[in-house]
Length: 125
Image 1 (cartoon, rainbow, N blue to C red):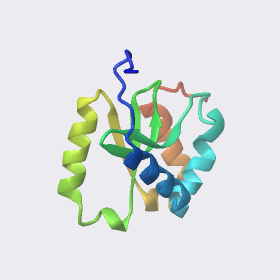
Image 2 (tube, rainbow, N blue to C red; image 1 turned 180 degrees about the horizontal axis):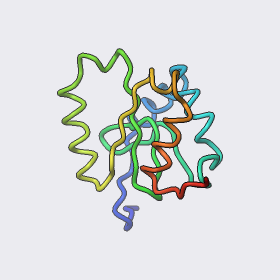
Image 3 (cartoon, rainbow, N blue to C red; image 1 turned 90 degrees about the horizontal axis):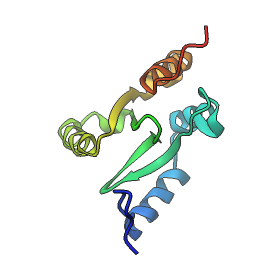
Image 4 (cartoon, helix red, strand yellow; image 1 turned 135 degrees about the vertical axis):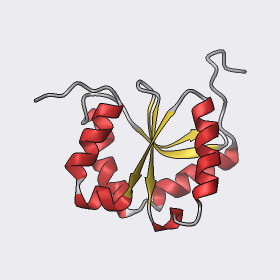
């Protein structure tokens, strides 16, 4: 039965690929997820390895329509692909925030502040 809310069903290939990404998460992904999961950041829900067909974004907040993509060394040679991918994701009305793995490892508090600001979470200070 088709959905009426504008979302598309994910394909079987996407579901399998998503599970592989979750299982083989990098340390920076695991570290960031440990701070985003269970509504720890401003009480809003984040999903990890969320499908936005035909792609899968590292983290996604539906409330803010915000995708978070982590960039490590594997992204060094894929800038054109990443730009095309980001264009398609933005067409779905989703903003994309790119964060370097090194930033997560060296300045996690700053990364969390950036994500909170991007998601529209009020500053608690």
